Image (cartoon, rainbow, N blue to C red):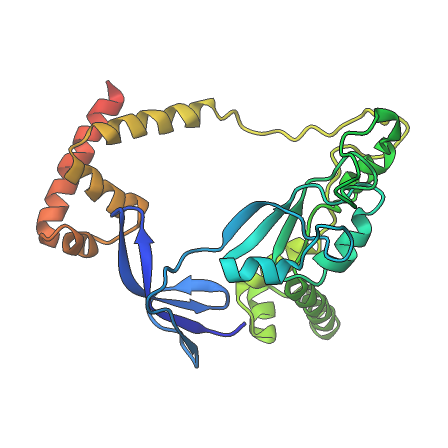
Length: 291
């Protein structure tokens, strides 16, 4: 994956709650500090807002498969949309066709709502709300068991194949399993990308496995969120009770991960003053949280 720098665009800083002109460097699919280590492409974003990809939560992208289906890439990318949620273009009968055609060849990440009616929304004249006797419940369950709702990008699939080949070659040559760092070095990819490719190649875990008892489900243990939620609520209340300038300092330092020197520039003061104020504010917050 190439490196490039987006120059001259306006970027929103949520901690400082303002737009500012700033350059962004991207290498191996990740935003980095500083400039890329090698050659890079420059993208002139002058006069543009630079944001993460937008999510369109209701589309119909089964192009050539339904009356209202349109081309995903042509409709999304010009609007800054990189992820879209299809609002039930297909049902159990034609979902696989959608997944292997329009979805497979689209660079937009498409998530899906599966219409309970087997034919999906093939035409605007086709009723969405059919009688339950026409629902193909076994096939709907089968689609979810097989993980058919998860789309892995073509580039990640291709990287997964390269990773598997490199692992096999290393095992034959050295008799051991290669580390992530070794794979990354050999394939010229980041460790993060190698990890994603390996994870994407893993089979999906079914929460309703097939067997003699079709009602059996797998329970996945999770930690109770109540304690963490209470802590977050308490912290938010204390943070909101601070004077506006103190609140901004904390947001810059601990939410936006700014250094004391960077925070000092935003607040038009010195690093020493930021350090003193920060200690005082944190002591005050700790006291209020323990009340």
